[in-house]
Length: 196
Image (cartoon, rainbow, N blue to C red; front, side, top):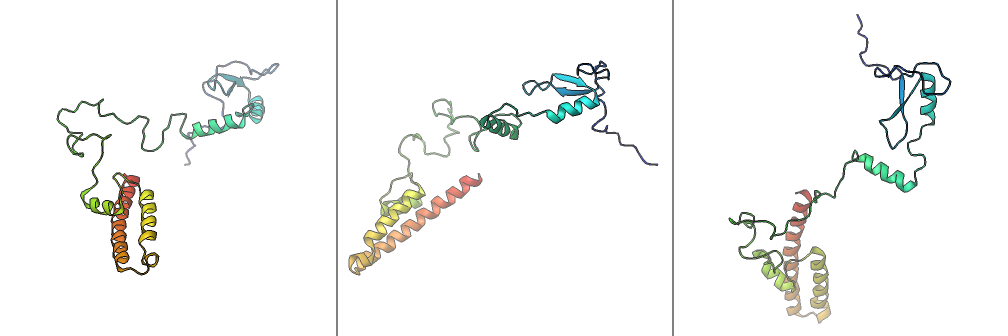
């Protein structure tokens, strides 16, 4: 024995139909199918017979009368179900100011040196102090700044630019090691920040 599908067909009359005549003028049929009156109020309906709801739906255009910018804004809002969104990592809130938080046990300060503030000068990690001094840079620093400083120093201290000097060659080796250490550390922080 085959079971009949319990799901009503798409063209089946609405079981919540109000039991009145079709809203199309001069139509004696029962209005069993609902259709929204406007895009501004999608919960206010006309009630039509099957023939007139098909004609109404064929001419319905949700975006009719909207400018291209309004259509784009509507499509963007629909991708998030009309809910507000924020860029990744911000979560809709602004960063906490140290003065806003009361932390008498210094739990929130555990990752930072005691007695230092975020807006004050920050100390570089111990393994980067010497490489940054070699490159002549202050902490905090970005990878782009490190790269441009390295290029500048490499041109200045290259042995070919200094007549094949051994001192320039040794200085360039030191610069290369310092650059590799800083680049490695900043690259790993960038990878952790992108995945965390």
